[in-house]
Image (cartoon, rainbow, N blue to C red; front, side, top):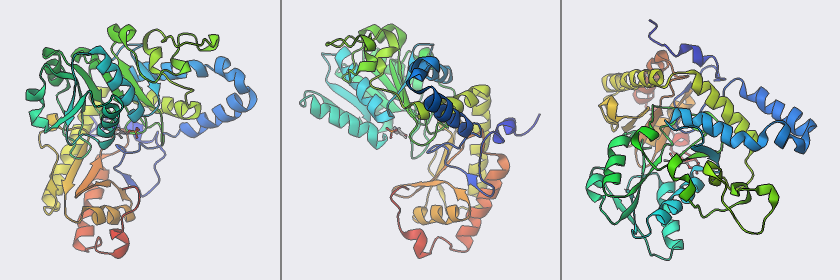
Length: 399
Ligand SMILES: *Cc1c(COP(=O)(O)O)cnc(C)c1O
């Protein structure tokens, strides 16, 4: 048995020579077959067949088709996932829909360290509703105890973007249900990184990101999941024409589309969707259990190598791989400048304020030898105090 069972996938990505890419959790790498597919959609479908492509090339069904494929990666069934909008917008739609299902309850519960957009969107929704609701934020370990009969919806990101800490999706969902609350998962750092079983857990709602582990490209559309049995009772506040039961009847009043169709709002970005489909297809060729095994082996390797060779960095990810997603993070007061010095050497990770160096491990294209090389570069950056150069200390707009 090869020590790198996913090695066959590495060659399917267009990674530049000399680059070790440890940021697939922020922007996934480019699959080699994406440019030709995009060129085909532009030249043949858009260029030649013009508007007839909505029918002729199935553009109108593309969001649903890719959604059904993503469903297989997150433990959902056909017709339970739709590709649409951004993760932020989908969160707004689903949080609002959740509140409508629990009219007697006023609390939206999450954790303080949740990804900012999730918190900002909830804050904006509460404000829109005229402060009739309350956004309650607690520490992660306080969540189970904070789910009481005032909570309408619990919304959490399964894998913490800073530390990689992995929530027990089934356990927290069960706890929410016990208290009569609804559960919404943000799978931004889970989809394509580890097996997820939304149906098994019975979660009502989920959202996730197309441009991270799904390799859909910059700004790829996101997805949303609505549990099948609930769909007919769901109303989102963004009632656009493509979420209508009969968009081309051009009726005056809104009638929601049956099923997951109501998760759509407006016209989907076909070019980005076509690119996302390539990334998702590639992911479906691999076995998610195999991806998880490789991810654990690689993150264990990162931790062992950094702790042995670079003890000045402090591990902030959980040490137990069962409680960790597919990234490893370390703290260091000069984290930002160290990451910049690493990037100058071709080792691309990223930095998250205040002091976290984050290394995303996308098992389809990160190899064991990449980890060894990356840690050797890290040691050299520290030994040579390479981080202590003015050009590495100025913060760019995107970190
Ligand atoms: C990346 C990420 C998002 C991204 O939201 P966009 O609307 O696509 O910008 C949302 N939530 C989490 C937890 C993320 O990690």
